[in-house]
Image (cartoon, rainbow over all chains, first blue to last red; front, side, top):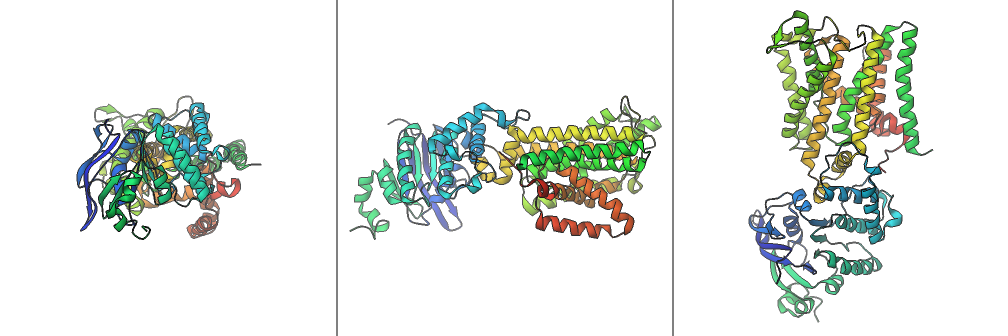
Amino acid sequence: MAEPVLSLKSISKSFGALKASDDVSLTLHTGEIHALIGPNGAGKSTLMGLVSGKLTPDSGSVWLDGTDVTGLSVARRARRGLGRSFQVSSLIPDYSALRNVMLALQACQGHSYRFLRPVNRDSALRDGARSILGRVGLGPRASVEAATLSHGERRLLEIAVALALAPRCFLLDEPMAGLGSEGTARLVGFLRELKREAPILLIEHDMDAVFQLADRISVLVYGRIIATGTAAEIRANPQVRAVYLGEDAT
Amino acid sequence: MDNLRKEWLLNALLAAALFMVPFWAWIASEPFIITLATRIAILAIAGVGLNIALGLGGMVSFGHALYLGIGGYVAGIAAHHAFHGTPILGLPGTNQMLPIWAIAMLFSGAIAAIVGALSLRTSGIFFIMITLAFAQMGFFFTLSWPAYGGEDGLPIFMRNQFPGLNTARPWELFLVAYGVLILTLGVFATLRAARFGAALMAIRQNPDRAAAIGISPFGIKLVAFILSGMITGLAGAMMADLTRFVSPAMMAWTMSGELIVIIILGGVGRLFGPVAGAAILVGFEVFFGGLTEHWKLWLGLVLLAVVLFARGGLIGLIAGRAQNG
């Protein structure tokens, strides 16, 4: 198999006596959606923090495109192609949707130490941002401030911002959170397209969406991955059924 | 009329008023009014400096008097040596504003780099306290520096000179201050509209998001803090020349507070916020200071009203919320 785009190599992280991540290894390959599921408190957010660089592991390493990025800051990892979305929408509230995406484009094109040329007249940034907003279906809402967008629109803008980074892989933290069934269905379709561009590490609560989308699923319980496999394998895994799908298993 | 147009109109009005009032005073031979307008212009320059850190970057520096003081002492010390014909570290003193400004900005920028590099590792109340602590260090250092007057301060016997103008004349000094104010406003507007400003304002609103898209908050904030200190330092050099006197009082924490008050009264992050704020502050000082020695009490009440009811300061009150496009 080709070298994974993103891989975690036996990562551990404890907060005091709590082992939030316990010897976690996983890989993300070109063209796939790898979903991470687990009950509340299983350590999904910790793992997200370890991948994005917000947290540093006690042991183990994070590899992106064959290089060890364990020691790099959040911003550095982002520049190397880690495009993430947040569980709770985290945008620049006073900026319009367009400017949120323009900022991401600006960040990914290079540094922000340019002091003279107005960004508003930077047609490369504007046009690029417009076309990305069009792709996620936010074109008509480009000039609305992020703070006044609806919840669903903010979720889409999160994706648009990640998209603008033209990342090597996406890190999507519960992108479906709070979306209605219609919104979820649309996003499922969109993510299916998106994975051709770059593989997606998906943390998601919506099991239907996960089983529809994911090429591989890893189940995290108490900071440990207890099983990894295709949707069918995970459904059939007795251990997973016991600890996670327990009540749904019939 | 949309908010953006309103703000531009208001800005133009403020710029025109700040020019026309002393112009009238010049015709009518009222040097006191001209000096007041010069003071407003110089305080506004200092405010523009702070507005980069506080308004755009959200860095509440409670120690910007430090840079004001550094600028002031550079002007004072250079003039002192020029006057006495003695060298400083082997170099001759100077009574020319342009090189003095350059040195003032260099020094305040260098100190801001050190202060920023250390204090930007913190945020919130800790940042406020650390910046205050550095300014207090400067204050007590100048207080115990007998070579340049110590607590008595250092007089500038002859005002420093600007090529082609006679700075001893109030009107010509005003023109210098006004010109520099317009220039610094131009710098502020350019920065704010450029990529740097976009990144800086984004970091103020959501540093985690900025980092997640690859913009390191620390570097951008540090550069903003240095630029901010440099502009305030420039204002300090001009302030020293206006009053022809520098003393540790320029670095006192009350001065840092006054600069913040200027920004809040005028409008945080707004281009002409410092101009409006400085005009209000000086206006209060003159009109209410003449009536009662407790004028700061009334200023405090106005500040309270602004914070409670008009968060955007005067500019925000008239022109509405800031537009980021």
